[in-house]
Structures are given as C-alpha cells and as structure tokens.
Amino acid sequence: MTELDGTWTDESEFAAFDEVAAQESGESAPPQPVLAVVGRPNVGKSTLVNRLLGRREAVVQDTPGVTRDRIAYDALWNGRRFTVVDTGGWEPDARGLQAAVAAQAELAMSTADAVLLVVDTTVGATSTDEAVARVLRRSDRPVLLAANKVDDERLVPEVAALWSLGLGEPHPVSALHGRYAGDLLDAILAALPETPRETVRTEGGPRRVALVGKPNVGKSSLLNRLTGEERAVVDPVAGTTVDPVDSLVELDGELWRFVDTAGLRKRVRTASGTEYYASLRTKAAIESAEVAIVLLDASEPISEQDLRVISMVVDAGRALVLAFNKWDLVDEDRRVRLARELDRELVRVRWAERVNISALTGRAVRKLAPALRTALDSWDRRVPTGQLNSWLSDLVAATPPPVRGGRQTKVLFATQAQTRPPTLVLFTTGFLESGYRRFVERRFREEFGFTGSPIRVSVRIREKRKR
Image: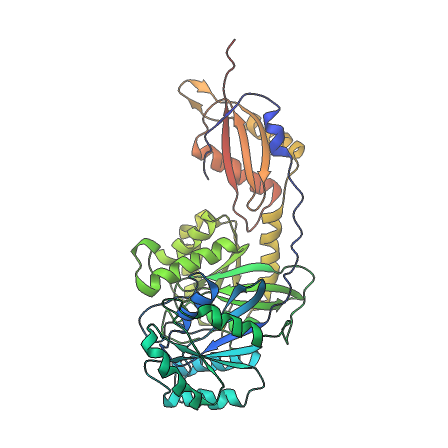
C-alpha cells in the first residue's frame, strides 16, 4: 500500500474520482503471417531477429545455445505486419536438451508461412547447414536464405558459394551492423502470404496469464500440459527457459494467452549476462499480463526466491493465483509442514487463490481456470461509492483511527478511484497510520470479497481553508 501526497480543498474535486470510464472492449488483432528463423547454433539468428524487428527483443549473448524455445515477436515493415519466430539452434543428430531444442525448430518450420535459414558467411555452408537445407527443400513453404555476418564488403563475393545449398538466391546481410537488412525485409514480405495458413479466431482478446516462479518448479512442464504439445523445452537443468514463451491455451472452454517466463534466480540489479535479460523480460511479462500464476514447488520449503517472485506480482498490481506444483511428491508430513509455512510466510497474500496441482500427472490443472476467473473478476470489480461510504462510516464509527499527536484524524469520504487493481482513496483530515490502512483493506476484503486481487489504499489529506 502506498500513500499519495496531495491535498483536497473542495467537495467537487473528489467527484472526478467517481467517474470511471467504461472498460474498453479488447478487439483481437487481425491474423498475421508467420516467418520462422532457423539455422544451426551461433549463426546470429537472435541478432538478426532484433534487426528485423528494429528493437532489442531476443536475448543475445556471445555463447551458442542461448535461445532454446521458439519465441514469437510482432514485426512491421513497409506498412505490413507479420510475426517473427526465433528458434534455438537446429542440429540433425542432437541428443538430450539439444534434441528438444531441435524439435522446437522443426515444429516452427512446419507451422510457419515462410522460413528464413540463417547461415554464417564467414564459415560457409557446413554439413549441418546442408542437412537443414535438405529438410527445407522438401517443405511446401517458401524458403529464404540469409547469408549473415557480411560485415565487410570484402565478404560479399563469399555469398555466391551458398547457392550450393539449393535454396535459391542467398541474401547477404549483417545483423550486427544492419547492412542490407532493408533488402532482406523486402524479400521476406514478397515471400509471405497476405494471410496466414492457420488462424486462431476468438471473439475478443484472450486474457493474459504470466507463468512465473523460481527455476525448475515446472513452469514449462505446466505449459506443455495445458497446450497438449511440447510447446516449451523441458529439461532437469534449471534455467532452460530464457525468453518468455507465448501460447494460446483453451482451458475450460475459454481461450487464454499464457506466457512461460524464465525462472528468477537473482535480483535484476545483481544478475548478469543471459540472467539479466531474462529477468528483465520476466518483469516485463508480469507487467503486460493481467493475472500471474506463481508456481511453487510443494515438495520443498517456501524459499526467499518464491517470496520475491510473489512480491513482484503484488507490486505490479496484478491478479494472483498460487499453484503448488509437484503435489504428487507431497506426503502427509510435508503437508503438515507446508500448512505451517503458509501461515508464516504467505501472510501478505492470504487473499490469493491456491491450487494444488501436478504438471507431470495433470492432477487438478483444470482447476486453474476457475481460480483465474475468480482472481480476474476481483481485479475488474468496482464497489459503488454510495455503498462504499455507507460501509466505511459504520467501520470508522466502530473503530476510529488512532490519535496521533493529540489529534483525532477523521475519515471524510472514500471512493474506489480505479480497478485493475482496485484502488481506494480515503479523504481525511490528517495522516493515517499504515496499520490502520491495512485494517481498512482487510475489512474491505471481508465485506466485498476481492479474492485473488491486490488492493491499494491511498490517502488524500484535506487542507483547512484560510478565512
């Protein structure tokens, strides 16, 4: 809860807070053709994606294998919008984690409207590039060949050697410096159809859900369980997910947009390299979502990392659902200890919805949809001003604010200034202690509900008029 500095001198001033505009109806964006960017590891795919987007979105680091999932971004060129899907490095004989990464790249190729193969011009066509080219030549999708890392005019003649891949004219480009990027974008628009082959149609924009939590709590496994496909790379190694992964999920008859995010290990200001950018994108995913599912490992004690992730969601003012994953590993003794931890560690978010699930077995994952709806209904709810003040007058009469400096602060009026999250503004004659504001918030919840949504309480102090 925060206090807003300010004064109130006229009864007409607070009338502005009582006028809440009608919620804008979200219209779904028109479908866009999809371009999949593929290639072997460390040829500069993510750097080229950022160049095509005209902004830094994909995580880039001078280490092979940073990108692992297929990540979709919106792009705009010459008035046309399209979607760019960045993929992990594709290798034909990969095993373990790299095999899962390669599977994501193959799926991106099969579902895209056009494919852009990126090759390192300074190295030339390798056996891996030739293997990828053989797969793409059998595809019924348009395929473009990008000869990347042409950072110097002296490398332009080397591009001609890539005709040997049998994918048509290679397009020279420097993802690092932007050389020939415009020509490549023109070629991409020429290859993309006006409308995508596969279109998901919805009545309105789906509600946005962020999947957050510390590393290795099962976020990607839950996303795969919900989508019914291997949408995100899953591996026992913590930190497999780096970029947020967007997916449309039909859950309980409703379409939702889920975002799988990187596990947060460190604070943003102390993270470095890939972790730093992953932390920034996770924070941005929370702020762009409407509700967050915080996954906690029910088989392990609640950690400081778990509490920090929950605080990020609450501070961002987003609706909250707590999902205790790996419930299939919880025995009776652990349940008793967990109940004590909930009472001790999660005092701040007792209002949050709780669901015990198992992403591995699918236990109770369908209960997430009702919990999400309850949290979002609270997040969107508004209490009429008349009803609010009738309740508040009874509350203040029964339990007035504490005396401060020998003076009794009076609560004159209150209104719910906004929703998303619900925000109460109390107009008073003096300062209200934080303890009393928490008391008002708690009693407000008891009276009107608001399960699953944070509530903010602000104070406006009325100045005495000078005669």
